[in-house]
Image (cartoon, rainbow, N blue to C red; front, side, top):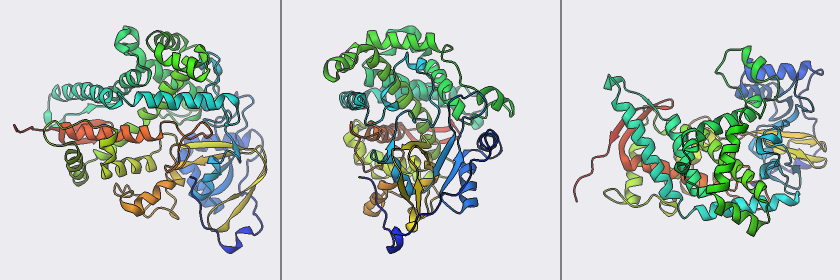
Amino acid sequence: MVPSFPQPASAAAATRPIPGSYGPPLLGPLRDRLDYFWFQGPDDFFRRRAADHKSTVFRANIPPTFPFFLGVDPRVVAVVDAAAFTALFDPALVDKRDVLIGPYVPSLAFTRGTRVGVYLDTQDPDHARTKAFSIDLLRRAARNWAAELRAAVDDMLAAVEEDLNRAPDPAAASASYLIPLQKCIFRFLCKALVGADPAADGLVDRFGVYILDVWLALQLVPTQKVGVIPQPLEELLLHSFPLPSFVVKPGYDLLYRFVEKHGAAAVSIAEKEHGISKEEAINNILFVLGFNAFGGFSVFLPFLVMEVGKPGRDDLRRRLREEVRRVLGGGDGGEAGFAAVREMALVRSTVYEVLRMQPPVPLQFGRARRDFVLRSHGGAAYEVGKGELLCGYQPLAMRDPAVFDRPEEFVPERFLDDDGEALLQYVYWSNGPETGEPSPGNKQCAAKEVVVATACMLVAELFRRYDDFECDGTSFTKLDKRELTPS
């Protein structure tokens, strides 16, 4: 269900023009690109323009742009409030074909010529089949999901503990969890989602994570502020032209053969039960595995661990630990599966709050199917023309002060109790409200429930193993191992 917002009696009044300008050809897009990537950054880019125009709906250019992105129109209608944002979820209003990451579409060579499901619109006849297959794959994976995650998390934490123990000065010890967490995510997803163990192929087991990192980067870097090399080199080398797929083709082909051989059961389900060809099935599986699941978790889960582990949040960690152990029971506890984490109200609320503040995909797009009136708070109404591209910036929409109290603060208890649960309809990270249901007829993330549950399971596994922990960025600085008392 898409949330509705009360409109005043004057809501039917005349529409207003959308403020903002695209500027002169070439120069306007280039100016906005430099602001977005260099002078302001994405968050400030949207905040400043909303403040300057005194409007949460405005016109702007979105990268990538000039000079070598031929056929890419950077002009968008930006949306940064919770009310207007809901138009992006209405398949009657917006077309989602080829707008996953904006007006730019990476080469189909990244998926061996297959246009995968996420780039299809709901009216495309292939969309329902690929979406139904994704939902089916996740449903079947649920049987082993928690057990495979726990095994992978145990391996990850053993590696992190080893790094911490090797530190020459225990008082200044630090161990990055970023790469161990990515390896954990890759291995557990391969086994649970695809039914394929990376250990069956030495090259995949050793290099699979890095192949996916490069594959993702080559597609996304033209649209992302990176910050690993100084400006203006980042603009010249990373944001001026599409990055080539041939660089990662040998690695992608290795993963393709791995799924073809070791994930044959999943491929067979696509062919026999959903009418998808073998090649399309493997490419869709790899996209769900690599882009949606691995890519999304690689962004979101480090933020989750970092937020919970921040110095000064001892009381939050104490309460989370007590809740986890109460639900799981004494000793080593029971399985932190889907049923168990549904009983962990504070853990779930904390996960939702991190998704609200740090959504793994900050931008959502949709192209107007027809002329329509876009409504915002207080009866504000704007005429959107057929073919215009709407660009919703979630980190601001989900900090809308008209919806959320103390919107810029991390409030882990925000979604507790009836009033807190009512706010879930304004949590949009999954390309739809958290109260919505993914289906073959919409574009909401098929793994919406699984993502939340997996994040809760990770928090539960941390507090099953440790009495406390602290982080400095993406590194653990303290891991107080739990002392089990004999029963």
